[in-house]
Image (cartoon, rainbow over all chains, first blue to last red):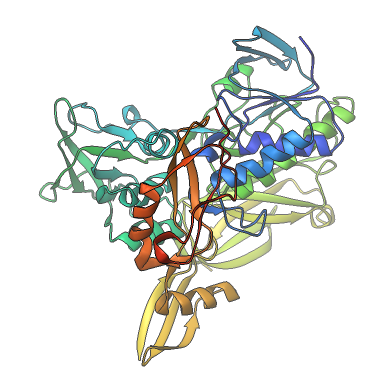
Length: 422
Length: 121
């Protein structure tokens, strides 16, 4: 088997952008391993528009956005294998994979980029009572059925969860002639982007019921009705608030979870908050030479940010190889702590010597905050204090750190990101 | 004086806009952080438009459906007429990104174009 410097696990938006960046940074020994029969990942089924406003300054559909990167991969002659399943990543960066043509094979890579994306939270993880009939789909499965296979999962639809895919599918099913009766959201706010609530629900008069959940599913063979009820602050159903909807389909859009089985077995340290690897300024995990980007690192709402992040991972993988795969920190390590409203940050540590002049730190808030401040402390000194009209868990936030600013602050140990009322 | 609250969709910021109208004319837009919000608000209250995306059946290709979009915005109240034409269309492979698959959809003057490459199987 041919060997490669960089093996990229996953040929979706993260893997593609990482590959292009690595190639552009001067490495010619890159292999993308993709489980599906084509490159592009989940974007292929995201036929709606709204992608690429940041990257390309125009509004593209998912397949168009993916193709911009696929074309670069093809034009640059980057190698990839389709229908290929990665079975294992060892701590020494040996990647074991298999497909029909090559059988099982191993590649001793110098660097590995994790770009496996995420999965939808399944019904089994949601504790919904009621029967288990046909007609219950995750929103993404329904999206694949409608947009790729050309099948309609049903005609009368109830959606649980207001994640972006659920919102997009509410519109998609409506356009294809289905009646979407209601979208129920357990939380008092939507987990989806504002623009999707406007364009996918409001436009079609689909009600969004916040603080509601499914309390019963009826139907032996196939779904016949779904009952939802309001929940209290403890998120438990309030008796007497039940509403029954006859329907043949229940779509679930209740969150995405980074797909990290491979990372875990490799010994990559995970964040309990993001369910993704803990990474440093180079997007490198605790295993030197193993990088992570995209939804496997933390779930994004904008693919533009995935591409940007993946580019950094690809670039840093080449830097790592060019340095002779030097391991360990080269300078003082600074910890980034998320607290008081900020749930996590990516990255979570900074090696000052390896830091670029500007570093984007992304994070999410844990609640809806209005007219609050994003504050950044260097040790105990507040260095950044910026008011935002609104922050919501569904929309990723970011701050940009300047290397010179960190250097000026002598013996900086800890950067704290928090949300403050004033 | 009439006030309308809108959520800007110009970008993922989702600014909360307040549009003040007098006799059907927009007199003020507030809450936007960029020019896009102003333009969107003025248009949305007078002449709302949308890009419609869907799929069209394709025969003889390496895929069952080819994803499509309207090449530009169409009036919001024409969405379902546009969908009717899109659902009725069948095209033959190949189709490439940007190819016109339905001309002048639902009399809007806007074409429906492919957003994906489908090659002959």
